[in-house]
Image (cartoon, rainbow, N blue to C red; front, side):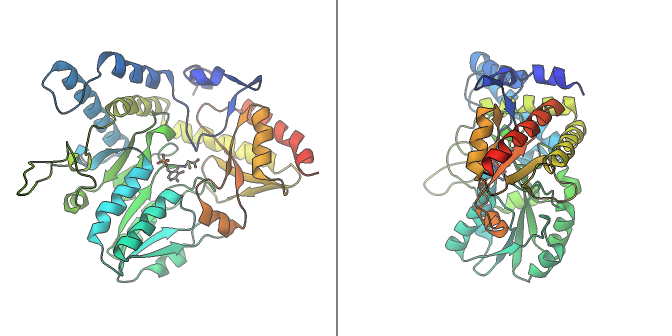
Length: 404
Ligand code: C6P
């Protein structure tokens, strides 16, 4: 893997920030997009702008073909069995809301949904909304001191009323990668289905929904070197067939009449309205970029950076790292002594480093950790050892000032 060549494909990495070279370490929030994705967006607007699935004219056909090509690329990336199982969404959040809203209608008062203490708000609030609407009960798997799920506690949460488990593939705060296949087997043995929040899984690790044996898998394109505003929800076909539509409108119907309306076949039943066909087409370019570099190479590179950065950071007096589970992904949440995360982030920004600060949309996890927020550095394929070293040097410089 030639990082110099990879970096050349990302024009934004040439930017300076406060007169310093930009070091972009906020990849868990949003990744940068390579030239080919930018070109795909431009081409869609300049050469193929027309509504999809509606026109007989050539432009519309071409736009439709580009979107449907992307669906096939997503299918292959996830190893789903058919394109009927691939639904375009606005992102992970919408994918999870779709499952909660639609599959949720198949649940009854008193049915139970299991989530975990390390979930993003996107995988908590939709279930809480469902609890208000339908009286379901939300149960929470605790975590241990390293930030791993307590699997024994998970097993004990199941009752005959457990209908669904929803868990993140990887935590956006702790970096913990959850044993999704094992959790799926346990859920299935109790007759429950499993939904995976793949926002932090899909960009960093090989996904095979058949091997994981998950029932739903949601992801966001913008966290995978792709355009914003588009994502994928994989759903097991038998379940999608049973589920009612999520939204009503054009595209999702078979026939509409005031006497009664029928739904379109999968996947269109879940794609009401004009989709983000530009984003959908450009998403294919992002996946092709990942495939070309190789997801295993990406994972290895990010892991090496993670190990190097963690070792170095721990030599800084007062450094506290949250999330130390073996096999974690390239996310480091930390605090320096009692310094406020926001102050640390501001100092780093002035030195050219883009990191995220705050609760990372995981306030229940912050409560468990007993903190308000952290600083978070997260890696992408274009990050280098030199960048990590300069980041460590910056932390070393600011640590004594922050800890005064
Ligand atoms: N986490 C972060 O900085 P959307 O916003 O729909 O693309 O993704 C939501 C989401 C869901 N689950 C997990 C585990 C996530 O990390 C995210 C997004 C960003 O950590 C923005 S809060």
